[in-house]
Amino acid sequence: MTGGASRLEQQLRFTVEIDAGDASCYDAAANLGKEERERQAARRVFGSLPADQAEELRGLREEFEAGAAGHLPETAAPEVATAPGA
Image (cartoon, one colour):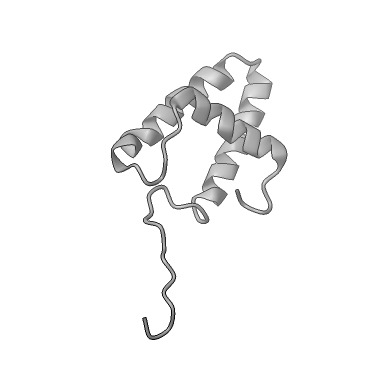
């Protein structure tokens, strides 16, 4: 997680990912359609709340996701360190 993310922002992200079915960033097939699954999950999760709370929490989650996108790639290959001269 990003260093500046609040615990609430992280919990909102995790709640939506749990509902959507979280996918490993190393599993390309599982990531197909991930964004749409998460949008639908967010609608379900936040749709069960009173409108003012839903709007506030949805905004926090979207802000967190926008910031996290620059720090955590959706798909990535693990980097391997090599010794100099190897």
